[in-house]
Length: 227
Length: 200
Image (tube, rainbow over the protein chains, first blue to last red):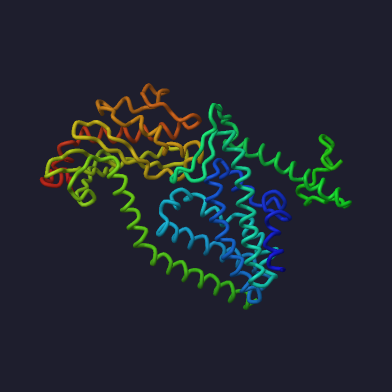
């Protein structure tokens, strides 16, 4: 039960991009196409599960004072192993994701989950946390990427090599959306919508919703999202 | 204090050992995958042939650079030549292409081997067939057509990715020029090595 609850946490309640607002750099960088978002997501799921489990298993060995360097060494090791193994046994996939894999080391979600969860909880729960957070991150990336790709390129690509690509007929793409400003626009609007939904849901249950401090937009009076 | 140092050292040692082991275990498969990839690209851009393309590759020195050419032969007769060419002027650095030509210097097609650092959705679209097919079927001539329209050539650049398109055109153009200059060495390279060191 606890396992399941931890698994679901990453999908909605603490969904990495929209609620915890971590991993913003890959979010802006890879969401130019759904295919890239999916690839990045899969690589992150793998590394997150491995590093979460390793750190959880070693949590009693790692001294508090050097935990961050230890976490980084563990994450970097798994990332490099993934990079090499993918290059050797899934060469095509590696070519498509080549630049994103080394980026995972600096993805705050890996270190964030190690620090916030895996370093304090047993292995099985950390596994659930890794799966949940990884899948949540992937879903969030895909939402952002779908909006950006459809508006910016006029296509929807799941896997171009396998022909899973569709074009929006008769649409003239707005190039801005796949450039960096489009990433910020999409992300900002989605974060706002997400806050709005959470406010509504909380109000229905008669509770007040407190957004994470980095996301609390109620001091601003332009749109009255909290009202 | 000592414990901190020991733990961190052990972590790094184990990590280093794991990485060394993974590296040695994946070295051969990575090499094989790279070879298969080059072979794949060669087959796509060259006409049917019966020689061992990788073994018959010819290295030519032109100016400061080494160029690799892959003559395709059918019963000892050269039916086409492919070459590897690179440009450092991509949007994110190096772009490596493989282009094929027939014996009469018609370009049969190009393949993008490396363009990892190009922006996904923009520069990375040089891999798309619509862009690459612009080179297909063109007679090499003086190769000056292999420039983007902005630079006076015939290649329509990808919207928002003129720099990447320019880098691809540049590498095709340079390769065709070197091919024209060294044609006899390349065609006869493997059977009769010339004084310039072809066939090494």
